Length: 437
Image (cartoon, rainbow, N blue to C red; front, side):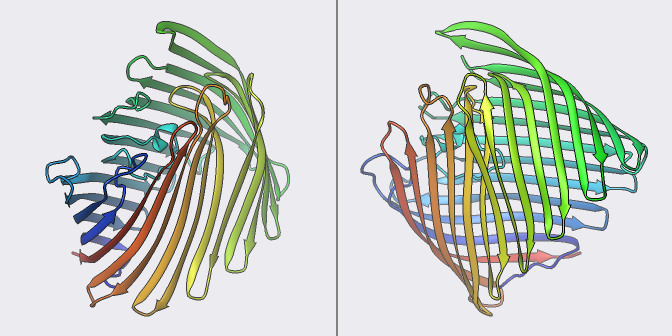
């Protein structure tokens, strides 16, 4: 394709795109909506440096949009600014990593993140801002005694929204683990953790602390066992009927894992029982990974049991296959969690992506994404899900410029609310400028 990127060394890039997009419901409103034709200019600066022991990735970008519905509305002007910084370094006996991301977007946009929350599926007007900082330090990676430190800060805020469930959240956490290699087959660990979750307004705040001792045992060359025992404490400040109430959940945490190497992959069993803000949560999973010719397959099945709530199944599948002229990937992931309102949920993410090279200058791809948040206490909250479909065609116009066209479809379904959907068609030209000093 035009502007193909080389690898290794220091490289600066500038991605430029000019697109025209027609959307029949750009704000994903319920019922009838006015369509909009939008012209968008995208500029993204990138810097990367990759060596044997060090990696630096920087990405800064934004769009300039002009819509035909109202030249003075909030969708006109500079939109979707984004900053991503990643740095990691490894030494013979240590490793360090640091990450910083900032993104601003419309609430109605489809945002794919590692951590799915119920707020990701709420449709409203207004702007959403996400900031995240992470770091990790690993000392004594090859020594008999080692130490791992990690932490994160996440901030989410909203402006010009009307839905009361869209409130700001500050989330911070630290974790430290000491490792003691008793012999080549036995490693003991001692860890502590701290997490502070603060929500704006009359919402639930929680402070979580804990410690745990563990053992990693190489029972045989193929079988490894992991055992952990600790104590968790969660301090919750919430509002019940408009009145502030404080309570504490505490108890023992237990973890047991077993990993078995097999001729064509591996198998895993995992049992975790921890104290969360709603009491004890226990999860159990069985998983299998298989190496296939031209691809990989892994799958898992399990259960989650939360205090005073019915058990719920958990499934996972990951499949990837390299074809002669393209690739196919399928992923299903279900994880138990807690909503921003401190209710027990199961978060589901399912995706299918297919790409195929037509000839030396053109290709096409298609994708499906499903995200679902299901509350385990059906009487209190509404489940919601979002489906996104897309298909696009790419062709080299010249050595430097690409033409990209495609279609998108989005649908949001929430219990006791009207369904929302949108269709869009886009056409763009793109180019990447690159420089290697």
